Length: 480
Image 1: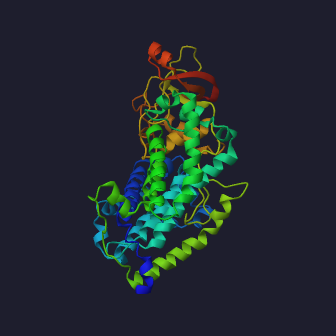
Image 2: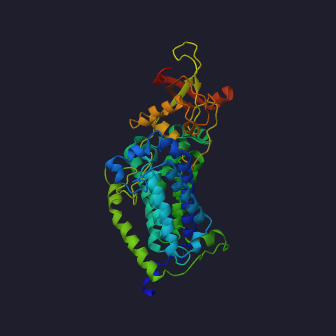
């Protein structure tokens, strides 16, 4: 056992607690998101029904519990089971069990969510879905309290943060001139998918500050990730920079759990010694065993070798001219390529969906707007903070406004509004017809921008919008 003494990451016991409990907490959020949204979006009568998707050969090849049978009841059972098991990790109950119990249970959490992701189609086609899958699989092997955290797993989590941050930095430098000439943040706070309460304030900051933001982003994503692999206290300082920059993104936007899980994973670089220094000796660490049992050392080394082997594809991708963004190289979503905002949208377009109970062709028809929970609509409404919760419909509406061609779900969405489908209406903030079916619906395109301070004082509006065209002309059910 002494020969494997180097494997015991005894200076990362606090990091293990944050990593496992933090990732588990985000799994709770992800599973509850599935409970609330999956049936309406992807269920038996959803916008993109999972049963129809599972008839495809491609779908049947994916690792998922639903390969042989899907039902909304089974989906809810899977999601609630995953949420409960993840909650047990959050409160520290499962860590009291031996590692031969803890690790398989955490892997069950991972596989339950993987089963959902692999049938989620467009509504689960986000990089942070692969990220939470990879993070869940990896932190499981940090083990319970009967073993010290294997240092190889700790470094593999830093490797995950490196790919996440450096990959995002490289995709920006390759993808959009505005990142290279330091103007990207002139636009980003206003045009990001889902602004939050402080996004307008951030957008209205001086342009010199936005250039400083971009420089800070380049430093945090292109330089700092390399420092995560250096000895302490450099690694802890690098992790602190990642955490602080991610907190700024949390404060100014709604990116589901992307920023939160990056913060959690960055703690893989923070040693117990750093915690003792920060707390003036009040926090000591040393949680759990001081050694790695031989049987678990074998498991940890085999898993580490497996993840290192899978790292060849994303490593090669990082230095390719045509770098892939948010790509999985295997069906299990392990050791992926990441990246975000390789290009910055300079104008914000929004799809506004309306309905009427009148004759849609009459000049005096009253059209009433459907209110979405997160995406901009009402020009006076303050954007809300939803992250780390993921509003999947709202995000897809942003892509729709950008001209996404992968939008067959939108026609079904309009149909569900004409039917006054209750599960679909529950995805919205406001149904202007109070649960009654409209006679007709339509979708119009608007150009949105944040109101200046003077405009806000004069009108009370937070947004200024201008109609630019019609996306879908008035449609109705047959016979109406």
